[in-house]
Length: 254
Ligand code: B12
Image (cartoon, rainbow, N blue to C red; front, side, top):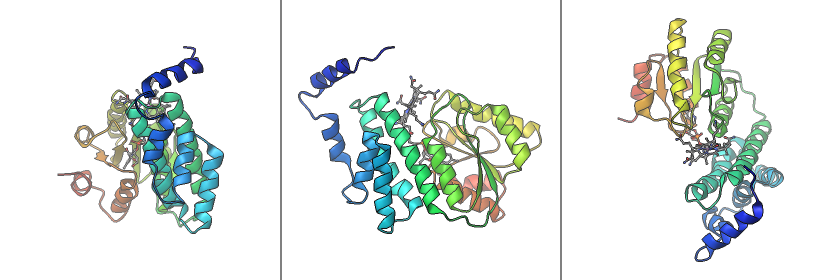
């Protein structure tokens, strides 16, 4: 479908007559911290260069690059997600913001420079058919920041590719991210094929569409609500808790 930008603008005018423009709505939501605000604003505007500039200034002022992923980039993306949910902005805006966000994550990862001794390998992926990879990239960044070697298979990863990677890398655990109620069923397929191959490692799953009830329907599933749960689950496995039931006890809400 051809999108004529002038028509979108006309629609905005009609829709916004009585209320705020999208920019004004966004301005209400930005954080007040003067280091963080420009980064959040640049995410909303989808301006990669300004995101990097803002991150640079914050890092120069002593902020931890990895902490900035949650404290600044996620905050900016939160503004975008909220306005999208409210119908104030549309998918093309979200796409540009997502790209700026991913560039920012890469930059923070580079800047963190800490390459701690590896605690073990983890295979990370986005479910087959699903291109939403922001959450997965945060999970990967936090795992790396916490000393794990991450094999990042990317997005829309065929089930068999996940199984092949697990066989090749013999990881501590696998993570899966799904943002759509249709694609999350690929996790069940991954679970079944792992079991078929005699591989019984924890399969930590999360992402917008996924919930605890769904994840408990397959044997290896451990649900993680936030990206920060991924390194916590990995640490628990590392300290000897390899039992899926016990991991669920520790990480699921009861
Ligand atoms: C950004 C976005 C996009 C971007 C994605 C860019 C990218 N590179 O990722 C673009 C514009 C490309 C896009 C496309 C589409 N999208 Co979209 N998109 C979104 C949006 C606005 C935000 C998603 C997001 O990034 N959230 C932020 C991240 C950080 O959250 P997250 O991934 O859940 O991760 C967090 C946690 O879940 C956790 N986590 C994630 N994984 C894991 C794993 C482990 C182990 C752990 C512990 C934790 C964890 O960590 C993160 C932070 O704590 C949502 C709406 C919404 N409100 O969620 C729709 C949404 C996900 N999209 C949707 C749809 C339908 C689509 C399209 C089909 C639209 C279309 N008609 O073309 C296509 C999908 C194409 C495809 N095959 O995948 C629907 C899905 C509906 C459903 N439930 O099935 C949503 C919900 C919008 C809606 N309300 O309808 N989208």
